[in-house]
Length: 81
Picture 1: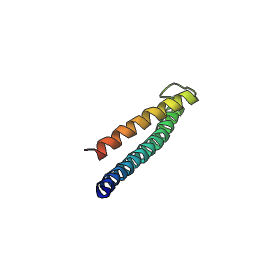
Picture 2: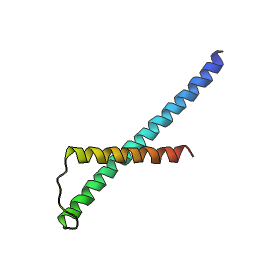
Picture 3: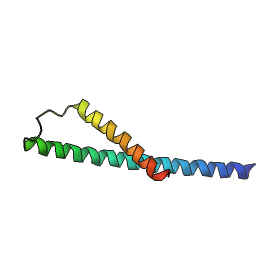
């Protein structure tokens, strides 16, 4: 009984480590993705290729949520194939 419980707990611990890895990869994807998006949009605005707009907290929050979800999907596809 204890041996079976130990095997099951080892499986849970491995799943937790995988979920932590997926979360870390998704967060790093979202952070660097948002950084690149902000830099590119600012450069395009300075070159007058796109119209000027102010970065509000709502716009940044929506961009971060979108990139975080994209990072989670990308990480899960990468590790669950």
